[in-house]
Image 1 (cartoon, rainbow, N blue to C red):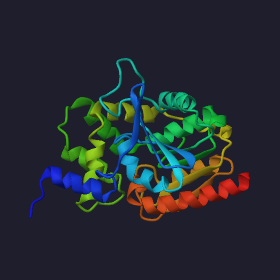
Image 2: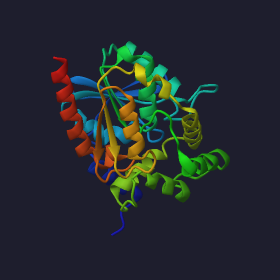
Image 3: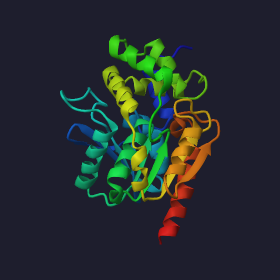
Image 4: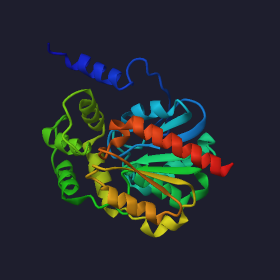
Amino acid sequence: MRISTQRRDEWALSELGVGSSYVPQMTQVGRVEVVRMGRGEPVVLVPGLAGGWRLLVPLARRLAARHEVILVGLEGDRGGVAPGAEDSPHDHATSIYGLMKRMGLERPTVFGVSFGGAIALDLAARFPHTLGRLVLMGAEARFRGGLGATIARRVLERFALPADNPFLNQFFNLLHGYRPEPGPLSRFVVDRCWETDQGVMARRLHALEKFDVSSMLHAIDVPTLILAGTKDVIVPPARQQSLSQAISGSTYSTLEGAGHIGFLTHRAEVGRKFSRWMRGSLALAS
């Protein structure tokens, strides 16, 4: 039996826990969307290069069982960036710093993934006293995207691609770390990523090529957790372990079989590791 596109997407969202029962408390702050859910110690989730906060909803729902989760959108996630606006981790970190001040968040945990991890690193290095804790996945102090990322950026810059383009979908599939089985999860990833304008993707890939906070890591003085997928081919675990070694007192942990989007494919394990680490860091602080 063939399932219509609309029904297929509705089913995929429902299976991932983001269907009609998901009612976010969403507000618009400037040009970005902010979504809040749950209660407890605040956790700010910073999304990656493509997919925006919607790609993080399945993880957010798990974390919201114990915490207040604040999903922050990035300018450009929906409809492109304003003329003349920058799209670098440094600029997004400055924006999130201002956003946290306006929201009255006092030393929240900041959890960044991939491009969002670069943003979180910049934020923690430049404004260390505004964070209570730092969690990173798929990040490093100086990104080295490799040939695949360079080819993807050149294609995005030079060719107007139709949505659901097979070439870019193969790049998105690399995020899993393995060839994903066709189904709701892989469809969810592709659909969310294509919600980000291809020009924005290209700008962010270019910004990552220039990103380097390796000389600023000594300024990070908050408890830090680094979670690395053992099959992450975008930022291999060895490079994430090197980042952990460069941040004083950080904790490094791996997710067996997870790729670059382990926060989605292995979200139950991420939630367990995060909760254990949070309990430990809170106990040490008391």
